[in-house]
Image 1 (tube, rainbow, N blue to C red):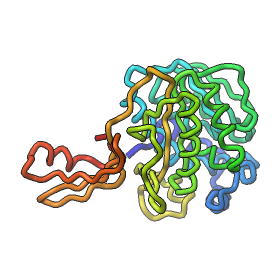
Image 2 (cartoon, rainbow, N blue to C red):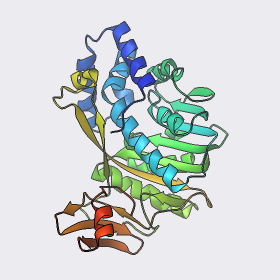
Image 3 (cartoon, helix red, strand yellow):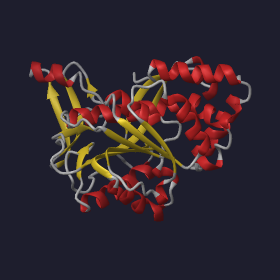
Image 4 (cartoon, rainbow, N blue to C red):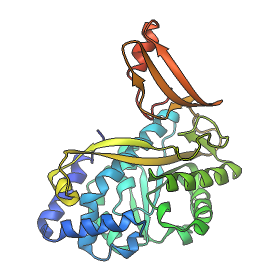
Length: 318
C-alpha cells in the first residue's frame, strides 16, 4: 500500500480536529459528485472547509498515484536527483509531498489557481522534508514563471482543461522543465486518450518517454481498451467517513506519462498491462513491448522464470 506520510496525515487530522468535522462529509460528497461530472475544482473549492474536505477525501488517493509514478521514475532514472521541483495545479500540495519524500531536500514551487488550496498547502508544508517552499497563484493556461525546474509534476489537473487548451498547457509545462515532466491523470478512457495526445506533442518537441511506454510509437491499444494502472491505499477513519465507504482500503485507478530531456534515464523493454493470469501450470502475461502488444506464457517447467512471473503484477516492468 502507498499511504500518506505520517506527518502529513497527522497534520490533516489536527486541522480537522481544530475545525470540527461537522459538514466536512457533506462537502466531500458534493465534491465527489462534481468531479465525477468532470467539474473543475474552482467551482467546488470555495472555502477553507472545502479544501480540508478535499484533503481528507481525495488527497490520500492522489498521493498514492503520484508516489507510485515517482517510484517508477526512480527506477527508470536512478541517477536523477532534482534539486528543484515545480508542482502545477498543486491543490493542497499532494504531489509536492510525494516529490519531497522521493527527493528529500529539493526546493519546491507550488502553483494553483485556488487560494484556499494554496492556504492549506502552506499550512501543511512545514511538516514535510522539502527544502525551500515557494507558493504562487497561477494556472496551467497562463503559466509563466520565467524559470525551469528539474522535475515538473502536474497531477489530476489537465483533466480540468478543455480539449482546445490541452496541448498549449503541455507546452508550458515542458518549457518550464529542464529534466523530467510527470503527468498523472484519472484512469479513465477519456483522460488516457488526452494523455496520448500530449505524448505525441511532447515527442515531437524532443521529449523521451521513460514510462509507462517501452517505445515511442503510437499506442497499440485499441478502443475500448486503454492504458491505466492501479494502486492500493489504506483508508483512515476520516477517509472512510468522508467517502461513505465500508472497506478499509481503496484502489485508485490512474493513467500517467513520464517524459524526459535527452540523456536522462531509460525506458523498459516491456510492461505488464493487466493482472497476470496464473495456475499451477503457467502464468499468462499481457505485455506492451518494444514491438507492440504481446501475450507471453511462462510454463512451470521453466522453474526460475515461472517463479519470477508469479511475483509480477499489473503495471510492473518486465
